[in-house]
Amino acid sequence: MLADTVKALTFDVFGTVVDWRSSVARECARVGEAKGVSADWEAFADDWRAGYGPSMGRVRSGELPWTTIDKLHRMVLDELLEKFAIPDLSEDEKDDLNRAWHRLDPWPDSVEGLERLRCKFVIATLSNGNVALLTNMAKRAGLPWDCILSAELARHYKPDPESYQTAAALLGLPVDQVMMVAAHKGDLHAARAVGLRTAFVPRPDEFGPNREVDTEPDPAFDVVASDFLELADKLGA
Image (cartoon, rainbow, N blue to C red):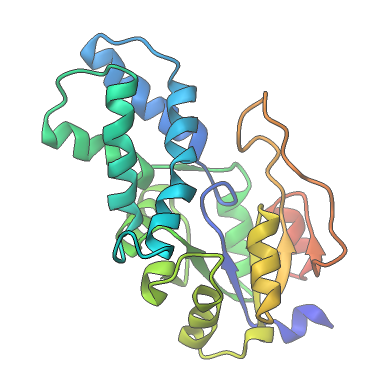
Protein backbone atom coordinates (compact mmCIF):
# COMPACT_ATOMS: atom_id res chain seq x y z
CA MET A 1 0.00 0.00 0.00
CA LEU A 2 1.34 3.42 -1.01
CA ALA A 3 0.80 5.05 2.39
CA ASP A 4 2.92 2.33 4.02
CA THR A 5 5.87 2.74 1.66
CA VAL A 6 6.02 6.52 1.94
CA LYS A 7 7.97 7.69 5.01
CA ALA A 8 8.09 11.46 4.53
CA LEU A 9 6.00 14.18 2.94
CA THR A 10 7.65 17.31 1.58
CA PHE A 11 5.47 20.34 0.90
CA ASP A 12 5.57 23.20 -1.48
CA VAL A 13 4.69 26.20 0.68
CA PHE A 14 3.72 29.35 -1.26
CA GLY A 15 0.18 28.72 -2.47
CA THR A 16 0.02 25.12 -1.24
CA VAL A 17 0.29 25.65 2.52
CA VAL A 18 -0.15 29.43 2.81
CA ASP A 19 -2.29 32.08 1.15
CA TRP A 20 0.43 34.41 -0.10
CA ARG A 21 -1.83 36.73 -2.11
CA SER A 22 -4.21 37.87 0.63
CA SER A 23 -1.40 38.03 3.17
CA VAL A 24 0.92 40.16 1.03
CA ALA A 25 -1.91 42.45 -0.11
CA ARG A 26 -2.82 43.04 3.56
CA GLU A 27 0.77 43.95 4.45
CA CYS A 28 1.04 46.31 1.48
CA ALA A 29 -2.25 47.98 2.38
CA ARG A 30 -0.93 48.56 5.90
CA VAL A 31 2.11 50.37 4.50
CA GLY A 32 -0.03 52.31 2.04
CA GLU A 33 -2.33 53.52 4.81
CA ALA A 34 0.64 54.63 6.88
CA LYS A 35 2.03 56.56 3.90
CA GLY A 36 -1.29 57.93 2.69
CA VAL A 37 -1.09 56.01 -0.59
CA SER A 38 -4.02 54.24 -2.25
CA ALA A 39 -3.38 51.46 -4.75
CA ASP A 40 -4.66 48.12 -5.95
CA TRP A 41 -2.77 46.13 -3.34
CA GLU A 42 -3.87 42.78 -4.70
CA ALA A 43 -2.38 43.79 -8.05
CA PHE A 44 0.77 44.78 -6.18
CA ALA A 45 0.90 41.31 -4.61
CA ASP A 46 0.29 39.70 -8.00
CA ASP A 47 3.10 41.69 -9.61
CA TRP A 48 5.44 40.86 -6.75
CA ARG A 49 4.72 37.17 -7.16
CA ALA A 50 5.04 37.47 -10.94
CA GLY A 51 8.64 38.60 -10.48
CA TYR A 52 9.47 35.39 -8.60
CA GLY A 53 9.98 33.07 -11.59
CA PRO A 54 12.00 35.45 -13.75
CA SER A 55 14.29 36.36 -10.86
CA MET A 56 14.99 32.68 -10.14
CA GLY A 57 15.63 32.29 -13.87
CA ARG A 58 18.43 34.84 -13.59
CA VAL A 59 20.06 32.62 -10.96
CA ARG A 60 19.62 29.49 -13.08
CA SER A 61 21.13 31.17 -16.14
CA GLY A 62 24.18 32.35 -14.21
CA GLU A 63 23.30 36.01 -14.64
CA LEU A 64 23.14 36.17 -10.84
CA PRO A 65 25.15 34.07 -8.38
CA TRP A 66 23.19 31.99 -5.86
CA THR A 67 20.74 34.47 -4.32
CA THR A 68 18.13 33.76 -1.66
CA ILE A 69 14.43 34.36 -2.21
CA ASP A 70 14.52 37.12 0.40
CA LYS A 71 17.05 38.99 -1.74
CA LEU A 72 15.20 38.25 -4.97
CA HIS A 73 11.94 39.45 -3.40
CA ARG A 74 13.68 42.67 -2.39
CA MET A 75 14.94 43.28 -5.93
CA VAL A 76 11.40 42.95 -7.26
CA LEU A 77 10.00 45.09 -4.43
CA ASP A 78 12.34 47.98 -5.21
CA GLU A 79 11.01 48.03 -8.79
CA LEU A 80 7.38 47.85 -7.65
CA LEU A 81 7.74 50.72 -5.19
CA GLU A 82 8.64 52.92 -8.15
CA LYS A 83 5.94 51.46 -10.40
CA PHE A 84 3.21 52.03 -7.81
CA ALA A 85 4.67 55.40 -6.73
CA ILE A 86 4.98 54.52 -3.06
CA PRO A 87 7.19 57.27 -1.65
CA ASP A 88 9.67 57.75 1.10
CA LEU A 89 10.08 54.32 2.63
CA SER A 90 13.13 54.10 4.83
CA GLU A 91 15.48 51.18 4.50
CA ASP A 92 14.00 49.66 7.66
CA GLU A 93 10.47 50.07 6.26
CA LYS A 94 11.45 48.41 2.99
CA ASP A 95 13.08 45.56 4.87
CA ASP A 96 9.98 45.09 7.01
CA LEU A 97 7.69 45.09 3.98
CA ASN A 98 9.93 42.58 2.25
CA ARG A 99 9.45 40.34 5.26
CA ALA A 100 5.73 40.23 4.49
CA TRP A 101 6.64 36.90 2.89
CA HIS A 102 7.70 35.67 6.35
CA ARG A 103 4.21 36.48 7.70
CA LEU A 104 1.90 34.57 5.38
CA ASP A 105 -1.32 33.08 6.72
CA PRO A 106 -2.01 29.36 6.29
CA TRP A 107 -5.05 28.07 4.43
CA PRO A 108 -7.82 27.11 6.89
CA ASP A 109 -7.09 23.37 6.66
CA SER A 110 -3.30 23.61 6.73
CA VAL A 111 -2.41 23.43 10.42
CA GLU A 112 -4.95 20.74 11.35
CA GLY A 113 -4.10 18.70 8.26
CA LEU A 114 -0.38 18.91 8.91
CA GLU A 115 -0.85 17.90 12.54
CA ARG A 116 -2.70 14.78 11.42
CA LEU A 117 -0.16 13.93 8.72
CA ARG A 118 2.70 14.43 11.17
CA CYS A 119 1.31 11.62 13.33
CA LYS A 120 2.16 9.14 10.58
CA PHE A 121 4.88 10.75 8.44
CA VAL A 122 7.88 12.99 8.74
CA ILE A 123 6.67 16.30 7.30
CA ALA A 124 8.99 18.96 5.92
CA THR A 125 8.92 22.00 3.72
CA LEU A 126 10.46 21.78 0.27
CA SER A 127 10.17 25.34 -0.91
CA ASN A 128 12.17 27.83 -2.89
CA GLY A 129 11.85 30.08 0.15
CA ASN A 130 15.04 30.38 2.15
CA VAL A 131 15.44 28.70 5.53
CA ALA A 132 15.07 31.88 7.59
CA LEU A 133 11.88 32.85 5.76
CA LEU A 134 10.32 29.40 6.18
CA THR A 135 11.32 29.20 9.84
CA ASN A 136 9.85 32.59 10.68
CA MET A 137 6.67 31.75 8.77
CA ALA A 138 6.27 28.45 10.62
CA LYS A 139 6.84 30.09 14.00
CA ARG A 140 4.21 32.77 13.37
CA ALA A 141 1.60 30.56 11.70
CA GLY A 142 1.99 27.50 13.92
CA LEU A 143 3.02 25.21 11.07
CA PRO A 144 4.20 22.00 12.77
CA TRP A 145 7.08 20.97 10.50
CA ASP A 146 9.48 18.25 11.64
CA CYS A 147 12.18 20.06 9.70
CA ILE A 148 12.68 22.94 7.30
CA LEU A 149 14.10 21.96 3.92
CA SER A 150 14.69 24.52 1.23
CA ALA A 151 16.11 24.88 -2.23
CA GLU A 152 18.70 27.02 -0.44
CA LEU A 153 20.27 23.82 0.94
CA ALA A 154 20.73 22.41 -2.56
CA ARG A 155 21.53 25.81 -4.11
CA HIS A 156 19.17 24.82 -6.88
CA TYR A 157 15.69 26.22 -7.22
CA LYS A 158 12.76 23.96 -7.99
CA PRO A 159 12.05 22.50 -10.46
CA ASP A 160 15.77 21.65 -10.81
CA PRO A 161 16.14 17.93 -9.98
CA GLU A 162 18.86 18.64 -7.41
CA SER A 163 16.34 20.36 -5.12
CA TYR A 164 14.22 17.19 -4.78
CA GLN A 165 17.18 14.81 -4.66
CA THR A 166 18.87 16.85 -1.93
CA ALA A 167 15.70 16.84 0.17
CA ALA A 168 15.43 13.04 0.04
CA ALA A 169 19.13 12.68 0.84
CA LEU A 170 18.86 15.02 3.84
CA LEU A 171 15.91 12.98 5.09
CA GLY A 172 18.01 9.82 4.73
CA LEU A 173 15.46 8.23 2.43
CA PRO A 174 15.37 6.85 -1.10
CA VAL A 175 13.40 9.15 -3.38
CA ASP A 176 10.49 6.73 -3.72
CA GLN A 177 9.84 6.91 0.04
CA VAL A 178 9.30 10.66 -0.16
CA MET A 179 6.05 12.21 -1.41
CA MET A 180 5.99 15.75 -2.76
CA VAL A 181 2.77 17.63 -1.95
CA ALA A 182 1.96 20.67 -4.04
CA ALA A 183 -0.80 22.72 -5.62
CA HIS A 184 1.29 23.21 -8.76
CA LYS A 185 1.51 20.52 -11.39
CA GLY A 186 4.91 21.61 -12.69
CA ASP A 187 6.43 21.09 -9.26
CA LEU A 188 4.92 17.61 -9.04
CA HIS A 189 5.95 16.54 -12.52
CA ALA A 190 9.53 17.61 -11.76
CA ALA A 191 9.49 15.69 -8.45
CA ARG A 192 8.02 12.62 -10.14
CA ALA A 193 10.72 12.74 -12.83
CA VAL A 194 13.39 12.06 -10.19
CA GLY A 195 11.37 9.33 -8.47
CA LEU A 196 9.39 11.03 -5.71
CA ARG A 197 5.78 10.06 -5.13
CA THR A 198 3.33 12.90 -5.67
CA ALA A 199 0.17 14.37 -4.12
CA PHE A 200 -1.80 17.10 -5.85
CA VAL A 201 -3.74 19.44 -3.56
CA PRO A 202 -5.15 22.21 -5.78
CA ARG A 203 -5.78 25.63 -4.29
CA PRO A 204 -8.35 27.26 -6.59
CA ASP A 205 -8.25 30.57 -4.68
CA GLU A 206 -4.47 31.00 -4.81
CA PHE A 207 -4.57 33.81 -7.37
CA GLY A 208 -7.87 35.33 -6.31
CA PRO A 209 -11.37 35.12 -7.80
CA ASN A 210 -10.56 36.42 -11.27
CA ARG A 211 -7.81 34.04 -12.33
CA GLU A 212 -8.46 30.49 -13.39
CA VAL A 213 -6.29 27.82 -11.78
CA ASP A 214 -5.70 24.32 -13.15
CA THR A 215 -7.38 22.05 -10.63
CA GLU A 216 -8.04 19.07 -12.89
CA PRO A 217 -6.78 15.74 -11.52
CA ASP A 218 -3.81 14.24 -13.34
CA PRO A 219 -3.50 10.45 -13.48
CA ALA A 220 0.28 10.83 -13.30
CA PHE A 221 -0.01 11.78 -9.62
CA ASP A 222 -0.32 9.18 -6.87
CA VAL A 223 -2.89 11.05 -4.80
CA VAL A 224 -5.30 13.92 -5.48
CA ALA A 225 -7.01 15.61 -2.53
CA SER A 226 -9.14 18.72 -2.11
CA ASP A 227 -7.23 19.85 0.99
CA PHE A 228 -4.84 18.54 3.66
CA LEU A 229 -7.66 16.96 5.67
CA GLU A 230 -8.69 14.83 2.72
CA LEU A 231 -5.02 14.09 2.05
CA ALA A 232 -4.72 12.80 5.63
CA ASP A 233 -7.81 10.65 5.09
CA LYS A 234 -6.42 9.17 1.89
CA LEU A 235 -3.05 8.45 3.47
CA GLY A 236 -4.54 6.89 6.59
CA ALA A 237 -3.34 9.60 8.97
